[in-house]
Image (cartoon, rainbow, N blue to C red):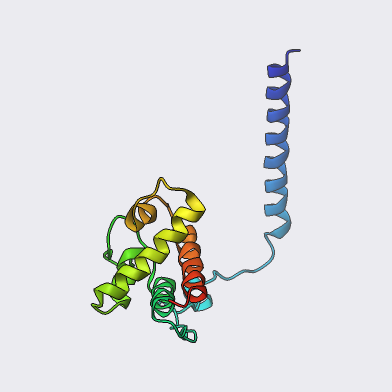
Length: 158
């Protein structure tokens, strides 16, 4: 017998054994009374996440800005290809811009520190924060990079 023929015979035997086991299970448990389960009564998860407390702010303005942006992304969500998406989630640049409250100099310094961390970790090929943000399918790496930027800004006393 060829390998394909043996595999087909084994598959047929296993299918038959599984079907027999399913029938035997139904026969053995038919006498047990059951009531349908209403999942709405069992699953009681809040629809909106509970607000998380803001961590103690860093004493330096740029580190505090980046920390606030990180917290905003944790609580409000991360997105790509837009500053703010339809759910209210933000990209790295959008979170920094929102948390700078219109202070363009502070925003620029925060973006410079973040871009410095990005180029250190991922090379010189990335020329902007939005370009880095949009290169990822989920927010894990951008969020981790923003957290490293918070620590770098704090270490530089920015």
